[in-house]
Image 1 (cartoon, rainbow, N blue to C red):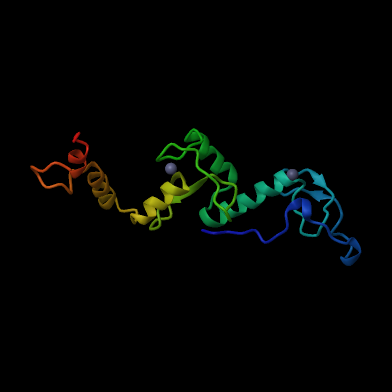
Image 2 (image 1 turned 45 degrees about the vertical axis):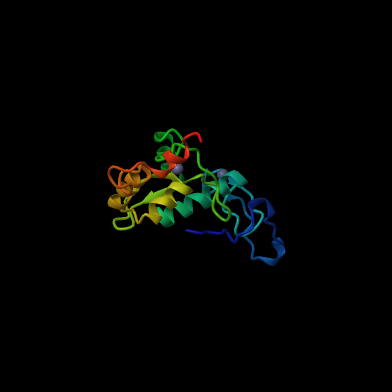
Amino acid sequence: MLYRNKNKRWEEQTADATKYPQGYFNPKPCRRCGTVFTPKAPSNLYCSQACSDYGVVSAYLNRCYGIDYDAYLSMLAEQSGVCALCGGEGFVMAGHHKLKLVVDHCHKTGRIRGLLCHNCNRALGLLQDDTDVIRKAVGYLEGVATIPQGRRPKRAKAQRPR
Ligand SMILES: [Zn+2]
Ligand SMILES: [Zn+2]
C-alpha cells in the first residue's frame, strides 16, 4: 500500500502563533513519550523528529494492520531483523515509510503472517499466495516439471566442450 505523509516534517513545522487562538502553543505532553513540550504548530503532536517518525509509522501500521510500532519491532526481533523468506535485511521503497520489511498478511483472513522484504512480499502476491502454484514454481525451477523424462536439459548440452 502506497502511503505518503502529506504533513510537513516535524522540524519544518512552523506557524505564526498570532494567527491561532490562544492555547494551541501551550506546552503539552508528547503523544509518543509523554514529555511535555512547547508545540511549534497546532498540528505538533510530538516532542521530536524521532517521536514524530515513530508516531507516523505507528499510526500507519495501526490503520493497515491493527498493530503498533512496538509490535512490529518485536516481530522484527523474533525474525532476527531479517525477511522471513529470503533472510535479507530488506530495503526501503520510495514513497513508503522507513520500514525495510513489510507486514505480510493473509488477504482472506487479515491474519499477519510475518515480516517480508518488498521483493518476497510482492513475489507471494504475484503467485496469488497460492501454495500449489508456489510448489509448482519450485518444481519448475528445479527442472523436474518441465523437462520430459529421458531428455537432458538443453543447458547441460551447451556446457559440453566443443
Ligand atoms: Zn516525545
Ligand atoms: Zn525477502
